Amino acid sequence: MVMFRRILKWVLWITGIFLAVLLLVAAGLFFMPNMVSTDWFRQQFEIRASRSLHRSITVKDLQWTWKEGMRIKGLEAADDPEYGKGPILSVDELLFSFDFELGPKRLFVDLEVDGLKANLVREKDGRTNLEAWLAQLKPPREPTEPTQHAPGEKEPVTPFILPGDLTAEIKLTHAQLQVDDRMENRLLEIHDGT
Image (tube, rainbow, N blue to C red; front, side):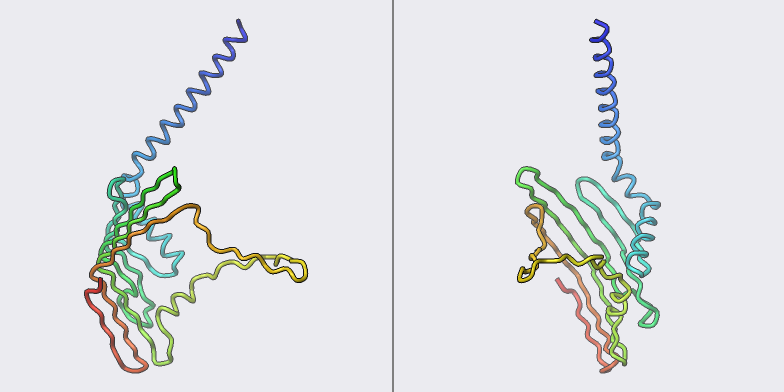
């Protein structure tokens, strides 16, 4: 009888801890959109994006709801001052949402971009602001030790494999592209691209 009570006591403790953790996870998921939609999170997003992209990234507003997804307003990536004062890339509004199905392993992604503006500049020496930006990004790590294969054996081909089906819908409205070719002294402007 004492052994039964001891086992029952442990089962109740484990069940209580499991329910408490489950409740904390549910509360975290419920309040996550409110945490993401704060100025503190927006500033953290700007800091981390600026560090990883080696450009000043600014966001005017960041909102997230489970129903609509993540909405970013006023996203800008600053250009190198050598090429101009304006941003190299800016977006008036970006809406990102996703959904998934566990059974057939399917991921649905919706991306709506409104007011994308890209400003590309080619200097007289042929360098472009986009090349300068991409050169600052770190290349992927090289493997430390090359794998050895038997003589005559081909290296295995490892294509990019998705863990399931991916369905994406990308909508681009009111896009603008400006290419300033200072080498040829020409300007290309495209407005209201869709």
